[in-house]
Image 1 (cartoon, rainbow, N blue to C red):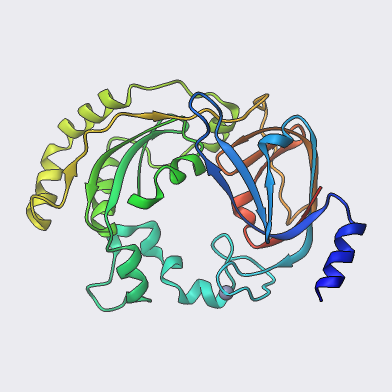
Image 2: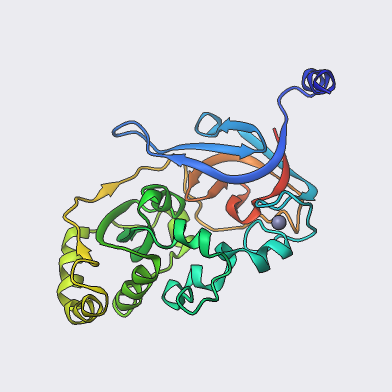
Length: 287
Ligand SMILES: [Zn+2]
């Protein structure tokens, strides 16, 4: 078996093929851009090194579920087969709306998974991806979450004990700030720097009443203010697109162009942009 793979590798020189995972994005050296690694199956491709060069991605037509590995005709919730999509707690609506957590009602799809993922400290943060936004994430997902969103700045402001609490706090903040990224503005680089510490102080003062009510419900120490400083990120972009054209493997299996930049989970090519996260599980040949 290994001999066959060995032989194939010699014939097909620079092509790597495998099912996509979301790109690995890591903070760069101080003052340098963040680092992008494309992940296709077992293959790892340094995308920063490909900036300014031609890049081609071709979908083979296959999709493998990111959880169970089974072949699926269609991808659900960015990378799952239908049975996993219906069965897994991580695909339930309460992940998107944590304030609707139904663990206490005994109807959580996977209580053990929830213990590990939902009943863990979460952080409420302010970020600047296309302007000010609020977001939540598990403590361990910082700063990955911000990089996945293409945020140029971020500041953790509160810490809570569970995902449900973080959802309830976010609901409060949503009265005052967006919780979505305008991805077109994010990709065009039309984002002004913000004073996140001033925004934090303004919002905490404004939402003091609501936060007080949540502390009464869950205990004074469960929702704690953080005293952190903002972090900022520089993305490897040679040129921002003026007009946004989106590529989509479902419509066109072959996507190619010169790689002009990387921001959030997007590739910016001179021919258009593509959100690779949306195609998690798609088997892609990259050259
Ligand atoms: Zn599956």
